[in-house]
Image (cartoon, rainbow, N blue to C red; front, side, top):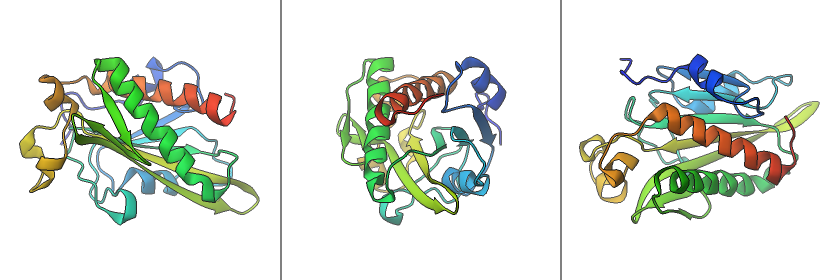
Length: 205
């Protein structure tokens, strides 16, 4: 079911400056995982910067094949297609880069101290608020691709987490005591990711 603050690909794209990350945006109401959705849309000619958001993931996953809970319409679950000129063995660099960006954006946007637990988790007040999953694939006659999946718990309440997860996870809304505008946060995350991607990996729009 579409929520009142459902994300809009057109609105997200319109509010972003020209960039690598976000040059194409897709919002899916339901998907297995946004990483899978990006991979399905990728061919040798697909330019980097495609972003797929999922309002709900039925099979979201984290590191070491752990499942990632994706309460419908509560968080930001998205994946980015990149073609960084790094070896597949260097994928942890991308995970750390993305996690640091998420933490920095949260700290900047909400004056909320956010830290990373290397290589891929973001914590607020000692609890996990976001995570990153990087999957790289070799392609014939083309540069390696990297799919950078990011999940941020945004408007969850305690009852949105199952079982013992509630003791280890939190959301921005729980930390701040108010609801968060997911659209504005998505824009901030994409902008910051793009700026630092260009700086760190030397890519140009």
